[in-house]
Figure 1: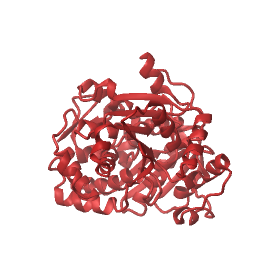
Figure 2: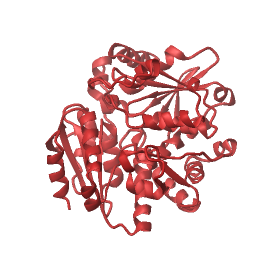
Figure 3: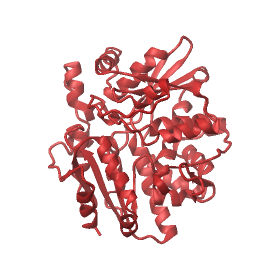
Figure 4: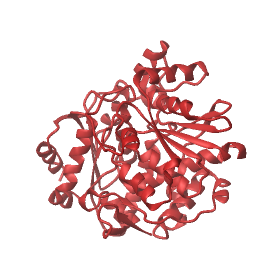
Length: 428
């Protein structure tokens, strides 16, 4: 199956080439122009890893044999994605049971294996991954590629704008993981990554790739847990399913829309954002206006120029997703805190990102519908915020306790491409 560059449709590449390249010409995103037909009922009857292999085989084609995909997904998805009941008509899809306690583990771990396969087939011995993180991508990518032969990873993150525990999960590793605290916000980090890809000489010399959700392997992997969620629901819940997604860079939402395109019974999806509301404003007015990024409690969603939105537009243009299947909601800081408190009163400990999705879902859920909101990170990753909101201490899980006291190995960087280029060339 060939993937086309949304910006330059004449550029068409295989899945593994798209994994290896990352971004296409003119920084275009790779995306399918058509979609396979899958037997949803048969898929839902399979166990998670096996189902995921069959699903990705349908999306990718024969480039990766089914047996190879089954091995890759068995290794990558060794942890669950349970639906936790919150009320009779609302559940949380918990995506934080992986090694770095966030949903990015699914995409990061599959991408690591897909990139290795791409390197082996193209006889490429070395890759330099340059990626920006607003919180959770950094840890997932760092752990997925840690000490992987032939791969150097450079992670840019906004200095002082992600939680200390989020930061410790990826700045304490060292070895082939290089971390840079950028004096700026996430959008400036993301802009630096785009400048790297514009430097064709640099890209060629270091064989540069990105592990953000712009990489198609990460996006396809995320489709899998939507199927896993529906597999856990009753037939009645499946019939009127509404899913609310905490949205920053919009990869998670795009994956859900792909799942719907493949036939998964999703009645409607809600894109829930914080004060960084470029998409909700655009959805209402038709005017794309990027404002300055605002720091919020749900910091992983502090993105004003979401990279994945062109893929959502492409699905709409293809006619496989109707506008009525998607709505948007903006949840402010007061409402976010209210969401954390309400969930706690229901006996469910959560954190700001999931609370944004929960509050958006509560606004829209109609009688007879069943709602899922995505729990994208373990509450302990936002220990300070959650404790301040609830007034109660929360315990650290082992993965966080192990790094809490470790020194950060991150270097400082001005939001300056020339300086970043020097750092990258030092890895040559």
